[in-house]
Length: 120
Image 1 (cartoon, rainbow, N blue to C red):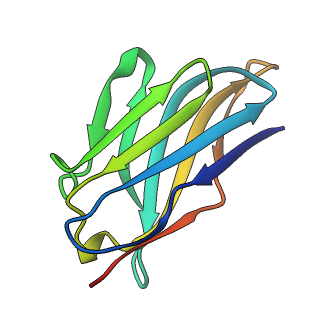
Image 2: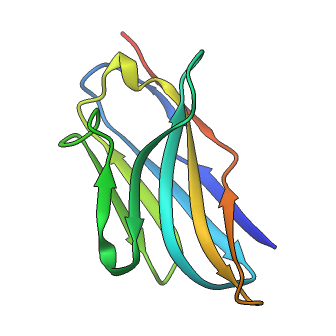
Image 3: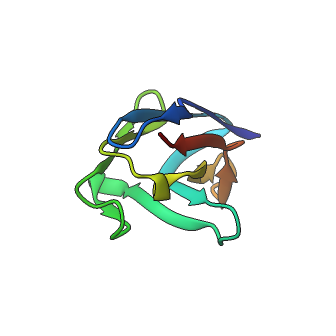
């Protein structure tokens, strides 16, 4: 089994910062990519940021310049540093890992989600 445990969500004022963490554990051979998604009320889940093999990163246009994704390969942990937060960033944030399991198959796993609320 593979488990992803998220932490770091909360309530913050516009312009503030939060740092989300997601730690993967279990029957992992390697991790090809780790990603952050978010889902706001009434909207579909969207990809916010990802980091893939080699450290290559991608960001949604709405968060470029404000959010930074990083990965600790030893701890199998991904982080999302969120700066200059806006009310439209309010959502449940989910981490995702593309995992090569011990059988060498590739599966995607999800964290439990953490609420981020940006409001004055």
